[in-house]
Amino acid sequence: NAGVTQTPKFQVLKTGQSMTLQCAQDMNHEYMSWYRQDPGMGLRLIHYSVGAGITDQGEVPNGYNVSRSTTEDFPLRLLSAAPSQTSVYFCASSLQGFGYTFGSGTRLTVV
Amino acid sequence: AQSVTQPDIHITVSEGASLELRCNYSYGATPYLFWYVQSPGQGLQLLLKYFSGDTLVQGIKGFEAEFKRSQSSFNLRKPSVHWSDAAEYFCAVVPDTGRRALTFGSGTRLQVQP
Image 1 (cartoon, chains in turn cyan, brown):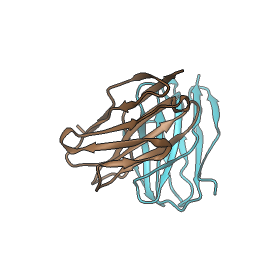
Image 2 (cartoon, chains in turn brown, orange; image 1 turned 90 degrees about the horizontal axis):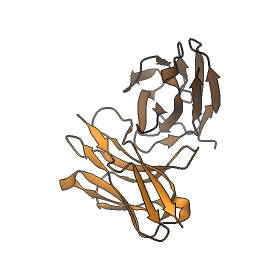
Image 3 (spheres, chains in turn yellow, cyan; image 1 turned 180 degrees about the horizontal axis):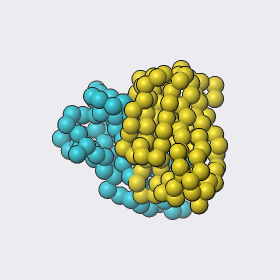
């Protein structure tokens, strides 16, 4: 039972490049979320999903895209990376949308 | 506006001393309440949660939290802090209606002095 798996753990991008942050969970959780963590700001919700095929925007969705084709996977796409997207990204999942289990994070630097 | 406030950015306590970390929320109705801990370079681990019932909830690692409806607070406490408790602590809520995703406070960094 791996829980929530995020890949890669570290990534450096150049401004304008695109990439996908992967998130997978093996707990058959319906709810999944993406957060970014910046110093002094806690974690802010980017996008979330309440099941396969259903996604919605969070507080800071601009510049990010998501899709949920399966229950297990919830990838986050950066369309055209900007330095302001330098952050640590966390994926989380939950059975009923209450107690969430977090992945170990992806540290992204955009230069 | 709905929000979660952790008024203390940084707290330093001596090992063996008691600890209280503050959390206040601003929601129309009582949300579901959580405390998470994050060690340096790590993900977040759930310490405890409050949904309803007894207002004093016990969590892992010897932590407890008390829900006070009149003060819209959910403060985290530990009677005797260990050096391994040094970490960042986040209070978070899920509203009782609407979006079932966590909204976090800005966090409190705990430093433990020997």
